[in-house]
Image (cartoon, rainbow, N blue to C red; front, side, top):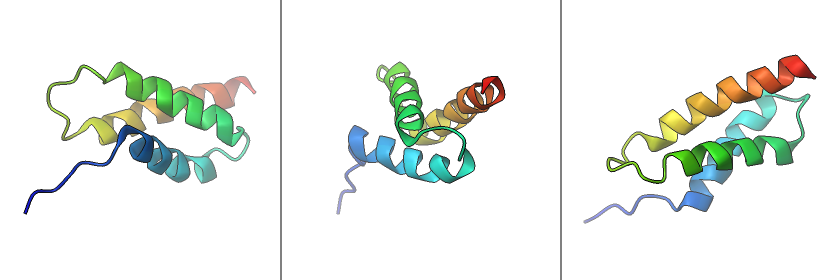
Length: 70
């Protein structure tokens, strides 16, 4: 039995859903845009096993910076 990795859209949605409650001062659209942009930066990654973790970590850094500016 093979396990299919989640689609890019599903991964972006999952990460956005987890981060939205952590950044209540930021619009959900902004959070999704940041997550999508970070995910795109990993599009050439040869090893996909940890992309979701890396995207979430980088998105948190960017969202924290955005929240500090607000």
